[in-house]
Image (cartoon, rainbow, N blue to C red; front, side):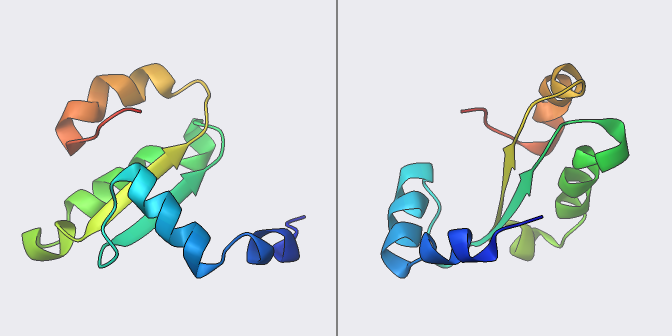
Length: 88
């Protein structure tokens, strides 16, 4: 169950602008969020591979936020360099 109202109330333009500034994401950049456990059945690394396959000009305008923890954290850390990923 996802409480859509909870997220809608916190998704105002000002909250969005502050969050983007905090993460260093420009307003004209498309931001994709993966939020969940880093486990094989959820396939979080597929998202990074998909973005990597975009044409270079589109890829430059995409940022992926990966939020979570799980068994794939070590694998994710090892592959981070392949996807030009920064850890925070």
